[in-house]
Image (cartoon, rainbow, N blue to C red; front, side):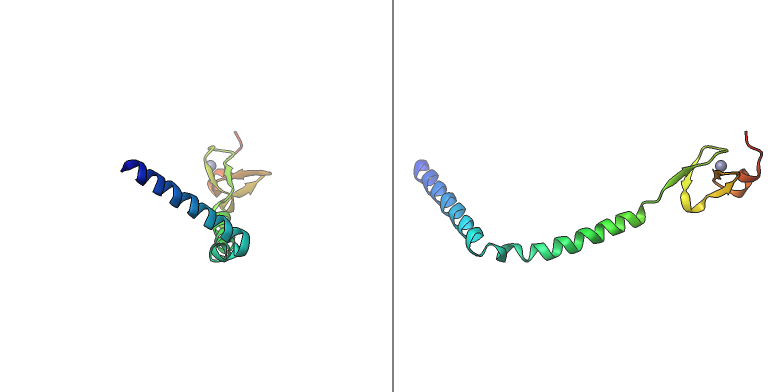
Length: 91
Ligand SMILES: [Zn+2]
């Protein structure tokens, strides 16, 4: 009995594989179309969101703390985390 089930399962798998392959060869773009518009639309959006969230971090020349580059205070060609550290004499 288990052999019969095994052969039935094998036959089903082979037929399923052949059917899938034939669909791919004939009109294979039907099953892919629903996915493809989603992926290109989702990936660039995800990339753009990821890029927007990533910000360059700089190291303060005085205290060595890392902070977002948008908050930098430049003095004497060096980057500082705040105006207080920028006004202090360089170590
Ligand atoms: Zn600092």
